[in-house]
Image (cartoon, rainbow, N blue to C red; front, side, top):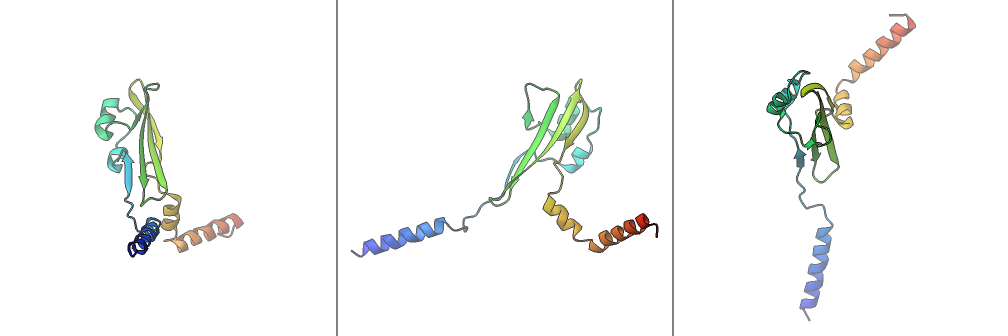
Length: 137
């Protein structure tokens, strides 16, 4: 009879531990990992081959639109929300015509944190703008 309380305690302990956040959740990075220096080298006029040499194969290459390449990356920190960023390249006649995307953009929280480092500078700029608007400056 002594094994039943032991089994019951072990079951309760395992259920309790399963609900805890003691389980390690690693950071998960998927998709293209691009280098800022290489992306900065992109400019209209590069051929598809030159872009491939710089950035590698795009993660999304549509068979229906050969003139659009998407480099997409997702990042999840310790089981949290998945953050998705993308760089889209547009080609005309196999030559890069333009690009768009936010692959190196900061998140809103990162922007607020960075802006909070300079409260006096932002405050003084606001005062200067008000003074100019009123004609006093």
